[in-house]
Image (cartoon, rainbow, N blue to C red; front, side):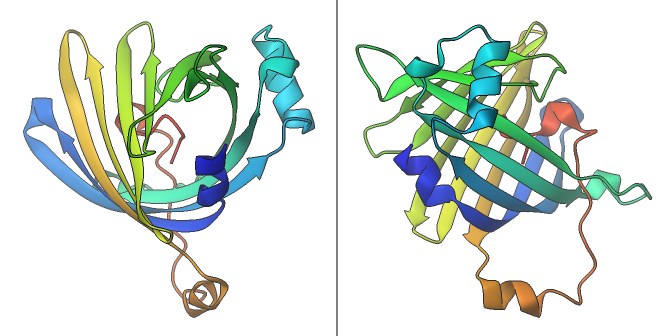
Length: 199
């Protein structure tokens, strides 16, 4: 939970995604809001019930909201925004590893249980297996206000996308400086290219 508490707040994520099958890459950015949730939050209890998991095994979770845009979406006139809630359920013998419960998977629209692992440098690794694909992401802090993320999506026996993101914390004064800029669009329709967290 400490990793997610450090992630709480607003972030600007600048991303490059490589579509390996097309030998093409695209850039984009997202604005992300992360709220850490305590173990007794009603949203945590609801997700545990959805997955038939004893809530007493959970340690908490987070709610994530995002808006984003990618180069391939420039022609779209639709404005989208999304949010998701996830729950951490540590393994009994090693709390640095465990299950990640979500109400809806990101690559497939069904409830999903992924895995999380903390590496030796306190980076977070997320692994999610779906029926038609799997994804793996690695998050780590370069500093308290800079977070790095890399990810791959594998489907039909081979890797289809790889992505790299630099995410910087948005302070309140920086947010007010951006108030005159155009809002960014969400990329939730490009589900195969997106993050486990939905950002």
